Length: 321
Image (cartoon, rainbow, N blue to C red):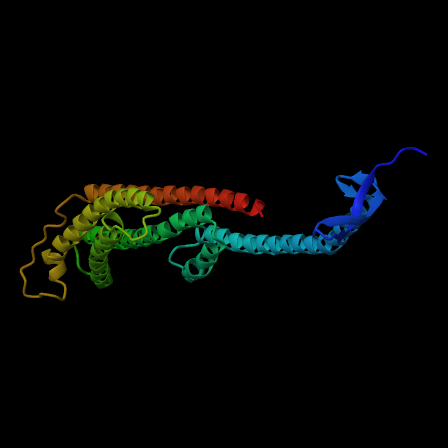
């Protein structure tokens, strides 16, 4: 048999008369092979304990990971729904007439439903870009309001001009309906001029000069608002010119002599400007209206590009979940 190493495992002693410990019996055991510093039985015991540990905690770990994956999945689905609703509303808004009930309903839903949900998701880049667009929509709506006003004024002014040209050409007041229509159209254009002054003031106060608490999108707002102010100032000149023209025509003896001042001496001077010059002025005014519509189109294209950037940020954000 081969040689073995023996190790002392037990030692029994007695106390002699002098009080010293005297070994009485020493127990030796043959040393056993060790694995990683442990004897075989201890190593097996440890392995069994480790296996038991993994048997218990691996399923728990898998359950945790599965649960976490399910939560991320649900969050990604919810986030995707919020993003889809927000960008869908933005695209709808930019395709709607800004003075329609649907536009107002969609913008309210955007402000008070979609935006709070986006903030809860905590994606700052997405929320900030959304706020930039949201803050610019009131100016977009205002541009349409001004354009609608200018279009109506041009239409009313054209009708009034037709009446003035007819009266100027015939030099008679026999067509009472024409005279009545003239006064009716003049009242409309006079009201339009007063309303336009209110729009000019709103443009300056709310968009050109105002410093909002939330400055996201402010640069774009002021850029387009200043361009709008240039257009509005030009159209104000046409408003003033045409109202002055109609006022002078109104004071003409021919108009005042037909049922409004029968005792007034008949004297007709006609247009202070030639009919051709007035017609040309109206054509210039129509070109300015076209320029205003171009401004709206440019602002709409700007907003569409902003929405495309928002869409890209949303896609990146959702892909991380």
